Amino acid sequence: MLNRMICTLALIAAICLGLSSNSATGQTKASWDAARKKMVDEYIITCGIKNQRVIQAMIDTLRHEFVPSQYRKQAYYDSAIAIGEAQTISSPFIVAYMTECLDPQPTDRVLEVGTGSGYQAAVLGEIVDQVYTIEIVEELGRNAAKTLKRLDYDNVHVRVGDGFQGWPKYAPFNKIIATCSPERVPQPLIDQLAEGGLMIIPVGERYQQSLYLFRKRDGKLESEVLRPTLFVPMTGRAESLRQVQPDPANPSILNGNFELPIGDDGFVQGWYYERQAKLVDDAKAPQGERYVEFKNDDVGRAAHMLQGFPVDGSKVASLKVTAQVKSELTFPGPSKGDVPLLAISFYDEERRDLGVGFLGPFVGTQDWHEEAKLIAVPRQAKEGIIRIGLFGATGTITFDAITLEKGSVRPGEK
Image (cartoon, rainbow, N blue to C red; front, side, top):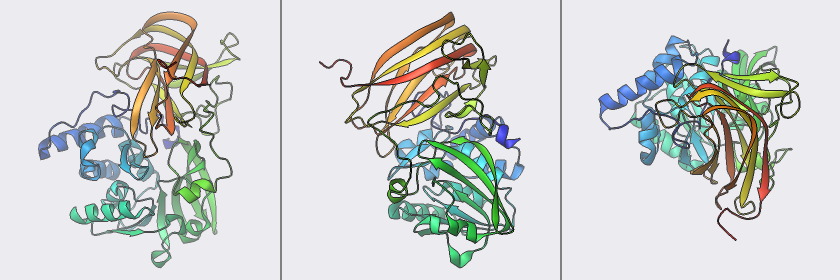
């Protein structure tokens, strides 16, 4: 079932960590087509997407046309890419996943909240009748409209405005998709969803969100939680109105000791985008009675998970990262990213990559032991993502007792 799939979303590829050996090199039509087909084979079909119309739309939609020119060679990684204004283009897998969840039909009228680059709208435009998409950032909305017009998406209609208010003129909508995260579902979207219609939307706190699929019955929403996720909020105002605010001056990890039981969605609580992760009950765990294990026998097959957190580099000079680690017969894969490790990537306020710090790689066989390292936080950092797993290496690796401790001095500074 879709809500049990453990495939990657994004930000886990070479744009941050060099964890992908795929590259969309060259700029001929043939090279783009080959890169796109490889992307679909490795990140869409392999990860469980089965709807043939969605798969074909992912093949037909020219993702590189929606990516800033400086990032075009990364267009067909399974990664999110910064597009400016603190926004990103969603990864190919999450676009395919959310589209499939909507059960798109040729006669559907679909509302999208959060146009961004226009890529999700273009994919929908390949397989439904009409798409109405709203972007609150004027420059992004204008650019997306130009791109969609240039690529002849005549059935995709773009306007600049507050997407959480919907588009009453064209309501009701058979389907609604939101690619930005509110704390709860906005009432105008509920009102504008047709009876029996579906809505997919990430809901929750800034760094602890889940994708929900809603169906409208008798004027009310019936919900199904799909999987943990990490999306940006709609606007600065939406962020400021959240009841639970992040604390970037005091970064921390949720459920770093893995003592919380598996959530109702079937995933490890607090962590996102699991692949081949298993929560193990063991009274001999280094801390508590649980730890997380990654096991992989197929070279290059991903096994990992991640968690986002706020961190202000102007207030946090460094992070002391500590973890209990055990490895058994772990061997790197053929690409430089196929190694077992713990890594932290940092991003600025525009979600541009600022670099990465590592614990590991953990190669071979070692019993439980503590690993610790002081990692410098870039001064421009506003967010971080911690990643753990095998990342395409083979063998078994387990983690427990992961902590972050704020430091006042950057490594190398007095």
